[in-house]
Length: 390
Image (tube, rainbow, N blue to C red; front, top):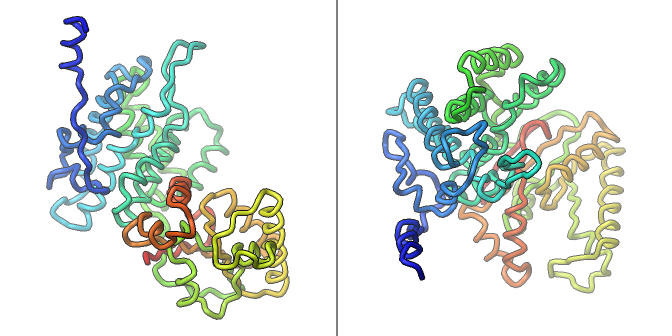
């Protein structure tokens, strides 16, 4: 090894990474100042140091320097808005500070150099960042964690907002008004993100104008958002309960305790019918044709219940938004008066509990894959969301 290479290795040596708790509490002091010396020892954050950014939008340098600036501006916002001596307000402030820290956590794995325009791009880094955030905040309360995940996933929404038509602006804001946090929180993250991006494009007066337009469209919903239910609402008319949760999270137990007399439509039951009960008691994995047949049986059962106005609970993992939407569309096709209630179920100690509960039935890597694919529901999908930790 050359002397110059040896010297480079000394100064460029990666730190010894730490295994931190799966929450964000260790990332801040009691005044919500980020503890950067701790944070950089987390490998997912350390990777930001080597992540290039477009010099057009980010003259501040790599994604690590950008994250530090965004966190600086976000802290200015939260200290002006919240009383950090009030425990409830402190948690709201921590939510926003955590979102600032995590907003670009998906960049290291998505950043590529595009020869066509000789620049760096990070397509879908919000969606990728959401999954990394969920993993690193697994032991936070489900509501805190998923609010941070929602902010990380959606933090790019307002970047090209002014280029949209009036109809598109209205559609975007109306959708965000049914998100997991107030639109105000998302604009706060957007302004912090832009302020932490050294670029002639990010002018304070233009940002203020944009926020003013968003506020005007959102009106009374700007600083409010729907709330999660902790008690199943007593709604009039037929109801469809759609369970959401990784295998082993406790969906069957919840149904037995809380919906014992409600008709249950369960994919696993139909899988057993398709295989003539030959492998009853084990988790079944059917081929594509088998799963298509099960889907048709589920749809037929939903149709029969809707035509006869019966309450139903659909018991499957329902982790992906597009599959949940297909269920809701099927229900509303037959009875538009159905109340759609999503029930999200999660074990108190995270995905490892699911693996232990299904030990011998489902391989741990399959359950981990379910967790990684989870798309948490929001209020655009249904009438109510009920959350329970089992």
